[in-house]
Length: 358
Ligand code: GN1
Ligand code: MG
Image (cartoon, rainbow, N blue to C red; front, top):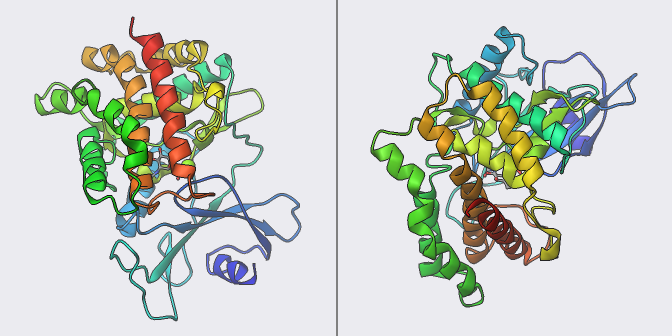
């Protein structure tokens, strides 16, 4: 970890760094906890930004700066980043001494982008939660969107079409047409099931084109583990702000339930572990509607059950496309990991579909 200590030392902090260790379960960035002299708990989070996914790092950190400043002005606890000594920006680029190599998608990967932020003290993360915490999470998420609803500065679309299901289905079609890893045959069943529901699941994009559904500033990655709770279950702070961008409110509502109402893990190999927990769903919805009732449009409220189905559906599409493409996007721990994730998300979709659609 010697090299990582050197990296962390390049930020504008006065502590003496003693150790850097891997942290968290993120599927995109590499995350580490940073220990300093005189403190037995880690004090900072060091992250290498995946710039194949977040290609415009300036826009990324600029979005986060605008959002965190706005939340801080309103008295909310939020992430705090440290400037790099070399450029006074909230990140620096480490230029690789080796000649740049072309990755298998043809993009060059020659820079490593690093950033450093505070660890929120006495915070707890969960993979699954109880109904009361779910209610509190619903309130906080609604409030998060509400607090950002008067942000005047523009927030860039950091990953274009990120939660556009029509675009995700097209990516899946392209992956199938190319069949780069020779995996299409074994996933035929899932492809058929997905495309059978295409019309129904692309409703949001149609409403948007008709001018009926707005985009608002959303978090767009509201997994349960992107929320820090205190010991009483109150949401202390919402983390992982990389994907904050204009989207339908369905994103935040639906993606939270995708993880929170799942009785199993996102990648549970045993599908019997997976069910859609209605108590979590109802508690979250109650909290969410309490804090959004004054600004959500009827079309947004009425379509929350659609949003609940959309996210397991979209995540199935994304994991499956990555599996078919030979695992170029999500980090995997074993060769069939994206297939296991696909099956687990699909089971969740089916369970939610049965329970939500009479
Ligand atoms: C990714 O890196 P992480 O785990 O916070 C992904 C989300 C997916 C999620 C699936 C930029 O988030 O969209 O829902 O994995 N983030 C990006 O667990 O693609
Ligand atoms: Mg995350």
